[in-house]
Amino acid sequence: MGNQTSNPQENEPEDEFAKFDGIDTLGYRVLGVQPNSPASAAGLVSFLDFLVGCNGEMLLGSGEGLEEGEEYDDIDFPGVLRDNVGKELELLVHNIKSNS
Image (cartoon, rainbow, N blue to C red; front, side, top):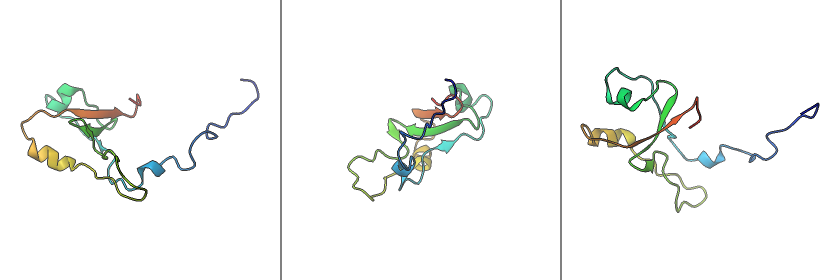
């Protein structure tokens, strides 16, 4: 409080996005939700929701066992959708408004 200024960047890493190097896809933005669709029933929100995981796996890959400079093995999400037409999928959704 008072006249002191704070610098929130003091404790941040030098490049906060460096951890995402080599990642092609972090997620897919929900651009539209049709009325009476499974997306609508699930409560997805256009433009604010991002699909970031599917069936217990992050779309950007886990990064486990990667050596420095190696690329993530991203999940082929469009392929997963094609292979599971008519089946139920468990999606992990991030909402940018609530940051949850």
